[in-house]
Length: 586
Image (cartoon, rainbow, N blue to C red; front, top):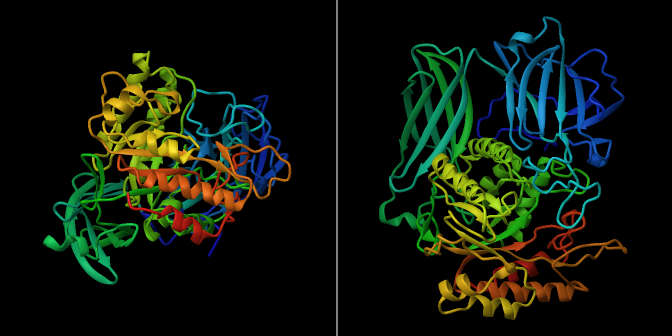
């Protein structure tokens, strides 16, 4: 398996060209350059897609830099009617020139963008791409997730990520092509919604043929005429009737059945484009106080996953490393992850789809409230939802975490409006998944009530949540984490209650005298395992919860409260962790 695989796993073409690898590079802290001019001094080189702060980039420079430049010369692997240049993610503001011509500008450090560069390509074999990345390390009003604004990582914040940190690639295209694809499973009718958007030269007499298969068996072969640039239809599958609980087409962590798809774009009888994709039949919903998967109550056993690696930071070392993270979460007994303060690489979602792991996607926070901060957040969150909408593994959207970026929810109406606006926007963009407005405490508009409680005493945890009248006792009188759980005017309406952060027991078998951090500490592996087992037992046996999320998957820099070390070595045998995670049914 190569280090980096096809970057867009749900709309695949055979022909593509990676631009990952060695680029020329320079910092521009004095902002001497304003465009891709010939006078830029290329003093360094960098291994893309790793950020300059990452050791794997060849630089490992974690000091403050607000502007950097990249350049790469390349030859086209093939000439085609159209050529598109793609960036998986550039943190934070990017401008891109090809052969001296500005082709793209994008703001947002976690979402993709692309540009049609056909008209600026030279007749000769060699082309040049130049990228400027602006990323003010002191700007707290941009979505930055866990990236520290101090020089050295502190508390629960980590090294910064500047510039290109996901794959760069070229895509040869026909003159008219399939530009976007969106899948929506409709569980009640046993249908799959298929939306196709066409780009390039839109012609008359366009149609798209959609073939859906499972294990080589053809399930559907439909052909739709396009209205303008779009086709939006529902594909009917054979309804299993009353026996749907045993239907082998349903997707779940226990049986991650994917349906392969092939889409062919035609103009009359002429085939002009063809792509591969996949989808799944599954539903997620809320029914009173339970989370539902495929129409059945489903207990959530999640682990909080920050998505960092020691030498590559937010970029995975390889595609195999992303697959291994999914496999390790499942091996430890979890059926899902809460991706914390990060929009994860689509390749991770691909492996979660294929291997069977639920994913909560959470918007990285800004840390200063302003109209500009919320506008930035809205734009990037909308792009993230559009990018990841079709992944069956994704089951919950989380707009805010622990009131970060909206710190005065109890007193400031504008802060409340921001949370409620993002909640309702998300529900409008995706009506098929639950949405959490603000996870942890001070909830208002939300489909799931998430509680963060790092009390290290399992008995106290059990007593706190084993109450006969949770509305009066828990929501009116007790304050886990010192915060009210719901804001005035938003009483608990019977939504599922999930303990979305707890545990955080630090144990570092490789400490070597360095300063580490955690919510509680264990001296050795046996005491670490005993503490984990006791916490999981207390939470699993609490009838109030419809799920939990343990902190955390792996050590992350100074935080040593992972079940795995930072290099993904288990601190105790995986089978012991699995047994403790699955201790008792929720």
